[in-house]
Length: 354
Ligand code: ADP
Ligand code: MG
Image 1 (cartoon, rainbow, N blue to C red):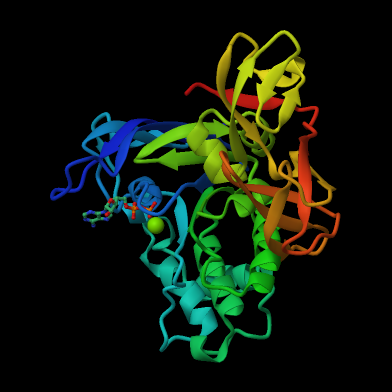
Image 2 (image 1 turned 180 degrees about the vertical axis):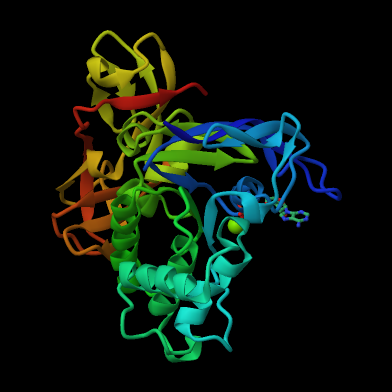
């Protein structure tokens, strides 16, 4: 069933010329994990705050568990919405122990107002176990690592057992290793308790890695809402292709033999949409094949190299196409000369109108 629904929700801050979120509609199913992905300033935090009830939209409506919470005559305050929130900066009380931090919110939620101190402790303790912090109940935030503090924040959000958890860049203050580990764990915790989640990130890999669906935002609007695979394979716009996959873009036009580009010929059956006759072709980094050649006029020079573990990412300067990026396991050195050919994924190459 539907846990959350937004219909044409618009929120504009008083001093701003354009809305921070602009006619946003979306629907979230039970137990679903949605990533909200987009560049800084595109309205991600505002969208979460509006869902939580900290901001009131000018138009549109929001429903939780199919009950309107704003718009359509409703105006339900945050503490009466069945929503947990995790912020980027943890927002823990420094003078409260772990268990008191986790229990704090419970006392202030109307749904839990009649709980006894003992019941509150039980709920808090359960949430602490859920996030793997048993044994840390009496610690204070300053004696915890960043990852542990974020676990406390997650436990605090989960303690009232909300059906929806909102996470605003929850991992962005953490070391890469902790981050990689914790994002997987947060996903399995939410799945384990059956809560739906929306997590904000500006990291495309993170969004694709752990979300069931990804909403890509731009200037207050959702530009595409689809599965991670679909976002990667069929980006709806050049902006998304650029932002999510960091692909190469080259001019292409149709000919009898296939699609002509400055990097070679591409099989016409692989280009989407099939009806176009010219445009900008998206080539993912793994679709450029590098072949070592002796230095000559046709060769490109490798001007940068990053070692990614499984493979390398190379940057090459092309005389007319600007910088190109290629990912491959083949090892080259900076300054090596190569020839590039296109080896498209069978999933097809998106083409964008100019
Ligand atoms: P994101 O989280 O994607 O970085 P935000 O939702 O924080 O984006 O901001 C969206 C837009 O709204 C930005 O242009 C930002 O400057 C503006 N904005 C955010 N909060 C406020 C506020 N309290 N008052 C006025 N403008 C705001
Ligand atoms: Mg933000």
